[in-house]
Image (cartoon, rainbow, N blue to C red; front, side):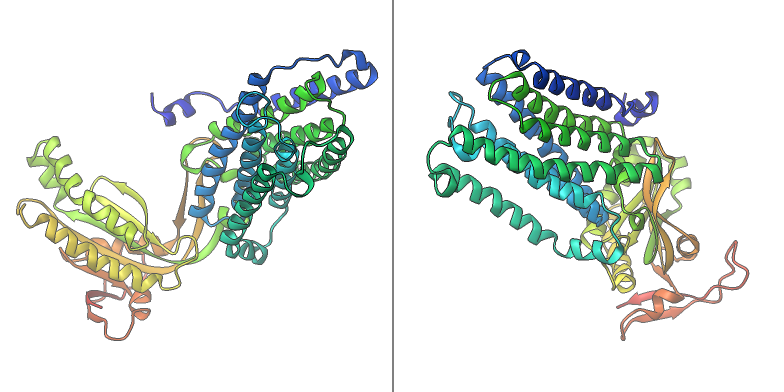
Length: 458
């Protein structure tokens, strides 16, 4: 069974199980504070190493997955969440190295790496929970690479001065000094993760997405973990508790993400503008004229070979030209330009891509005279760009509006091997574009005739 079928076959995981862990964690902390004798000792270096390294691995996977989604959707909240996971992963990895007798061994900087990394991650998490306005979100996206480089530099600098035992990490830290650092970092972390938990709970109240409640509870677990750090003593029950709370928190986020629809796994986190916003785009439709009759006379294997022969060459070409291949249905392909608002030249770009597409398709079909040929249509205008689908199950980020419908109609009216563009696209083309005006088109669903042109060259 495929991942999609599995997700549809089972109900989403309930996000309230981290609440049970939160309550149990508070109870354990209260017990060891009220009865210090209950804070027993268990010193197991390999268990500590693999526990911390496991948490780091979860954060690496989450950071990468959310980062890819942030880049694809140009969403500032996803970028901040990704940075939170990456910073936690880096410092947790350093802390694992400080496990005595495993790799590097005891090191002052690496011992403090977890509370330091979690505090830094908390800063990004708290910022991501804010209701970011469009202008603030654009500023964050503009600083994306600077933030990534700065975070990388901080982690590298921490590792370097820890290994070299420079500055505050000159030699082993005394118990009081270590406690002072941990309490200070824990205080910062509690505030930041509490703010993040409140921010995501507020977002949950607005959207009622179960994933958001899971995120809010996970950040509450991290706030509790930072609180426990202030009282924890090495290799005691309280010390193991904050490690486990941290692992459960990141694991809860991973499990919640796993239950979401794979195509838009992190869509509950999207900013409002990513979920739904008007945008000027250009849409290219292309399909094969005569595909039905070709399929009727040909075996399915040969039909599949023909389609793969075309799309093996054409899909990478469309993506290289900056288009988002929204869907392929049989012989038809739909491509969107400027879906994320970063292509002001979307109309000439889409028109040029249409010409390149037809030239490449003709080259592919040169040795196959029996294959049907493509016709293509391009239209530009305002659409609603956002998430389409139910709160669970299949969801897709696409575009909706008359602009899309007319692009499909223009493609149906195009001559074989040619590209037909609408009036809005034609008006946006650079000087020198060679256009042949078609007779006014009577298009199904449109009250009046439609102006359209065959694009000969740019």
